[in-house]
Image (cartoon, rainbow, N blue to C red; front, top):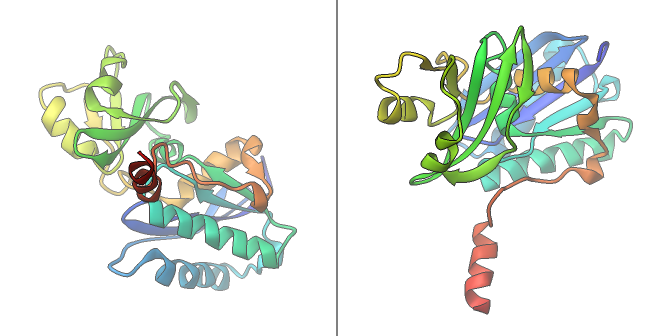
Length: 233
């Protein structure tokens, strides 16, 4: 896809990240760790991004947003922000993009297998496997929530493998410390980056949808759903 003006928002983890790209070129990106909630920082970051790139909402072609897995609250804030923006600018299309796919795009310069991994809870991870060759990311498995053993037992480690995501270094140290063919992503690329949402959308126009059709992919029951199931049992 070419000549798209894309605003991207990622609130799926501990960071808040916003990016703007045009015609495949990254124009602006800011990623911050914040002690404030995503709801307090993400829209001011969007405003700053548009002011400094000189774009108005009406000039945007699409808004890409991480739609999970990840933080329940963070994901809802990101999706809600995009729906609100599109409500005021109905010509903008939206794209909900897997957090794990976007993490794989952080590693687009790598040649080999990519394991995108995020900690769900003790012993449980969100994970997906991808192949990267000459900058092209190909999905190998669907996003899943599973034990570490379940995920890694199904992977082929005969070639080079890169771990990316918030528990990448932890898993390298605990499971692959002696395997020189398994490496972690560089520190500036191991966590979510909104620019990778732009890259994923530029590669796949099928990700576009109306803002009304945006939804969150939690992969597991929310606390409210678990509480309701407990009450009903």
